[in-house]
Length: 403
Image (cartoon, rainbow, N blue to C red; front, side, top):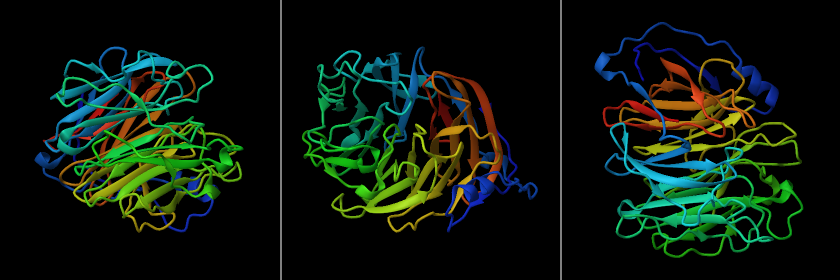
């Protein structure tokens, strides 16, 4: 399916200085005000295509290489003990899938937040990290943080490895980022051997400087005061300047499940911590995050109270940065994905109506470079249980959503 329109309007803006969940929800539920159509040449209007994964595939993750080729990893099998597969896209056609995990049934999809993450490193090498299933470790051993990379011949993946050496207590999903300098960063949140609960969980990082051949022992990079939401996911990214970003959810004093950005300008030596948005909820929301970059811009997307939004970030981003949310107030928007085209248009896709063992719909909204919501928006049913969507920009400046 393909969607196109040429109208534009102004969306809700969530501003700086936001200090309470009540204010957040009031702003998010504010009326969408249309300012009339802004004419745009038809050739300049991005289209949106929907693309289903191969049969039985769920939880897609996608990244583009330097040539604009889309690389995809997805899950298939029993949700608690399944497999990961890698494929490339040629237009709307998937290449023959390669299994990523060397140990059968060592990946997990249950809960949506623990799936695979993919990154492209030096010379186009593919790197994948994921939470191990209960079959990935011997009885009594901690859940592993698994990693593999494409082999030198580009014919398959090397045997999977557990990168967790010290920071046990893995629950929610981790993150991976890589760059053209041969650096690979894998992060997860856990409490470590002495942890007493979510309130002292931290984000841990292990780094490779040789294209993933070897990794250093993990170290904590988040403030212990924030904690980390045990069953929430993360995301990570390295921008064109070499800055490193991670997104995660806190667990301060049980009730504070705030979104945080970690940013480093010194190769991961030190990280600055920034609160993106507060959320007062005394439960684990099982949320995921998304980071996207293009032409020097870095965008971060997250969920708060059943609403999704995104903001442009830098290593100097202040607390509670100005964010933009898609028009509408369904209150069940989750698992955002982002894509940016060469003109600076941004597509956000997300899940609607999903829950524990419950599928739903995929929805989307295109914004122009000035963060104005266009009339290019839509919703499609058929999102499978435990799945989500992943978006990327095409060479024609249109967008594709995989689900």
